[in-house]
Image 1 (cartoon, rainbow, N blue to C red):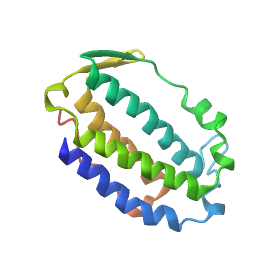
Image 2: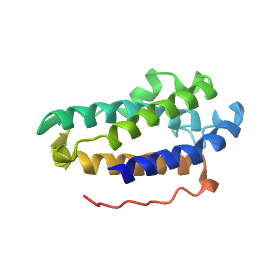
Image 3: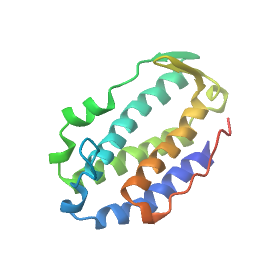
Length: 158
C-alpha cells in the first residue's frame, strides 16, 4: 500500500499550492444552482476523509464490517462550508489526508483483504477502498482545479 500512500502524498503536494492560490471570492462561486462551490467540494472531501478514516481503521480491525451510507448534500449544508474560511478548509483537508496517507502506508498486509459493505453495496476489500479513495480525491480536485492535471492512476488493482 506504500505506492497508494505515496500517490496520495504526491497528489496533496501538487494540489496544495494551487488551492492556496485561489481567491476566497472565486471558491465561493456556485457554477449552477444546486451545484457545489469549490469550498463545498473541498468540504465534501473533508467529510470523505473522515468517513474513510472510519472505514479504513474499522475494516483493518475486523474481517467484515457493515458501514452506513451518508447523505453528502446534508453533510455539506449542515456544516456550512460555504461560509467557512477557505484557507482553514485547505489546511484541514491537507492535514487530514496526510494522516490518511500514513494509515494507508502502515496498513498490515495480512488485513488488506478484510471486507466492508457500505449501505447496500459490497463487499469491497479495504485495499480497494484505499486505492479508490485516492481516485475520489483526484476526481473532486479536477472539479476545483481543472487545469492542474490530476489523472487517474490506479484502476481496480485489487
